[in-house]
Length: 230
Image 1: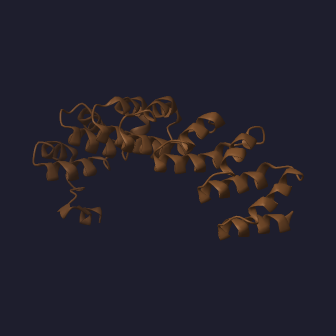
Image 2: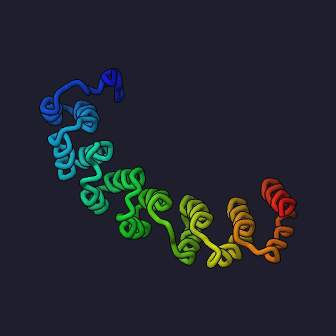
Image 3: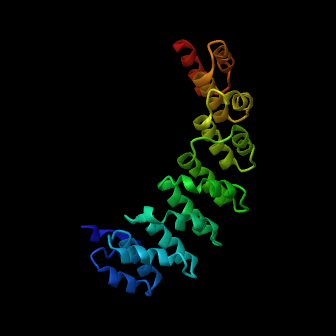
């Protein structure tokens, strides 16, 4: 039974009626949390509307929990715009929860707002924003990805390297390759090597020989294997 599930030692009351769960929202915060979780699994309109209403609560904790649980409700797709609007919330915790919900549902409509959050003053929000891009975007300009790669935030730089491999194509890979192959970052050089293997012509792939002398053994092995398979 789902009733055995707990949060911080508090049993989630899945078997309670929606009306009873709504009443629990006025109790202590621990009761509020489990009530929201139970509401997320209900299939009636009241449970759904109750979770949406929580997005306007004065307490940012309650807004965040309401948003997280709304993302689990079966009717979630009916209110995508409401969740996107939470990216403008004054609480960075709510904003990051909105990003996670958007990421888990691959809501491409949120892409432009996610891009704007990459300029946030909150570093955790920026990190959360870039982690969602691979779930929302099919194509991102290489110049923009290189800009992110050069970011002072190491986590953002590393995420940008992953995105470069995902987003590059035959027409734009060389610019990223020429920058990454000279990087001090081992992962960046490995991605450069992979770009060369994936998109390079037979003549261009002769550059794999450069990576045979890389100080990183994994890169040397990858380039050697790639050369043997050509």
